[in-house]
Length: 289
Image (tube, rainbow, N blue to C red; front, side):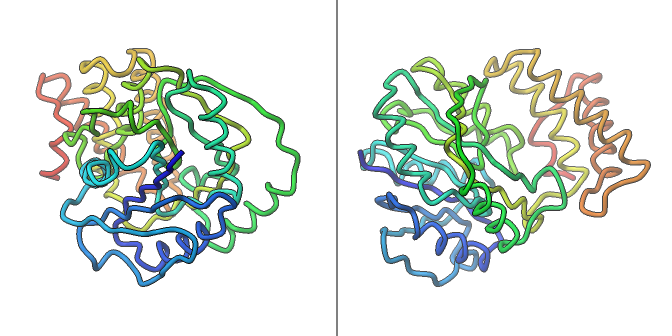
């Protein structure tokens, strides 16, 4: 199988270089890595030894950047793997991934297990993340397979032949809250969407390049409503994720973490709720905020 890795990036030039250097240590190197960025000011100078690297520029926003890279990759590979520009895969990640696709033709989408996820806390430096990863690699990894509505975008893979005309929904602008679930859930018609415990990595959760609190808060309500109406996620999933985030923002806005704009998120939640009540909620409204 020919395997391409796509890494969308934005304002993380130095971190991207370190992530690429780490990726150069895969026991099964990717056949090509495609870096998708608005322009060349977002990329560094690292040149890998074990895989080809190419760049595609022109668009900004996670969905748009994923799409321009998909256009570059389709027709030239069998597997497309998306890594965030702050995700560190275990050194055997791609080897295990390729074998999983070979052994399980009924699997359409595979995502790995983030043994540490900095998106849920203050985040990790590169060195902290690498230390956590090496500790996890030394431990026994029993196989566990779990089914999901969609895949977590920091590390998700799919069969290129099944993508066809499907693209990430560019109405989910900027950071694209839940765009990964929307995109991968539509591949379920080809097979299972699974998470594998043996595919490990660390998501650093870098806070650079993130959107403002109010924009994220608006998206936390507007995007699930949009996807529920679109029919790509069940109502139970959309309502659960909205409720969880709104409640968390309400409680934590009283004593907000230093790394999260909880009050801004809550303000965005309430603004989106008002728009929902008025019948004019729109995921693209965050461009006006």
